[in-house]
Image (cartoon, rainbow, N blue to C red; front, side, top):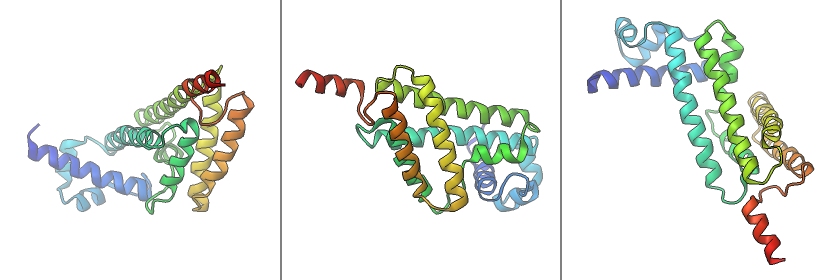
Length: 203
């Protein structure tokens, strides 16, 4: 695809992404996306055959960008592991353009009426669970998958509550609950297996 066509496609997708996240999928029509992207409607349809296809492209890109952001935000907080996820949540909740989880919002609107979009939503939540399980495993959890599923409920609940209440401190409450949950399975929150072994060796 030529550079100018790639730029046009990107501009359409950027515009749709901003509108879908800010105002919802159903309330934003193709005519408005084309107008705000400054392209003809026929041009939009030459890149995306339908609004459903545009929604799928948005969610697929959002999944890649959001997971990359989360992993980077956690890695910047050295040595805090699972609890760093909730610190990252607070960072996100404090952003002026925070409107909740794009995937929860899209699924609430569309359900399974767009099967391809619904599959991306499910895949995104699975990827998030697997990431939490990887962090739990690095902290020495005996059953990392089970702990990840429980922590996911805290993450999801915090996102929805913060979106409704418009209060980033919800992340702090979720972090406190997560610390108790992590401690309940015999782990020291924020301490990796390697760090715990090193501390034990010193003792």
